[in-house]
Image (cartoon, rainbow, N blue to C red; front, top):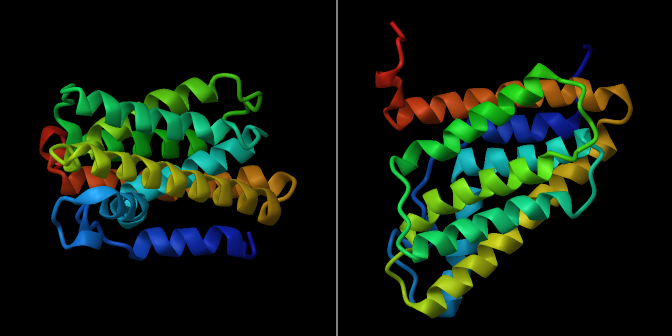
Length: 212
């Protein structure tokens, strides 16, 4: 391949250069107070967490590969909101810290595998379940806030994830036309799998694996 398109190079460079951040870095690490701070925290959260951002980008790319429409990524976003609400109802997921990077590793591996299954019928259920796991994992940082903060957080969380997924989908359609869509999606999947694996290592899961 003579060159990697701009649509692939920018997200790849961002993912490789970004380091993990705290869930509420936008608020200095403290819990949000009120609807406005909750909204700000929700808008910032998926962007400053590299493994979650990578997965949301992958949702958009996989939607393009599956020739899906604007509603397909909404299943993932709906799943994250549902997962947050489950956590607010005292449902805890343990260990939560490796669920997001593990899902990024699996979806990245699937994209890199390049399986020809483009009807998209099962993707909505995959996105819904993956979204619920993400919501359960990430909402632990917001649990304990007042209801107004939680409502603002969920709104911001839903808005930014939808925008990122749609942008990734449209960018994939625009920059990766024809056969390039599938070829570049496989490269992106490999990068995503690497991000997920790195995040797993940082989370301490590597100690459970037979890696010398």
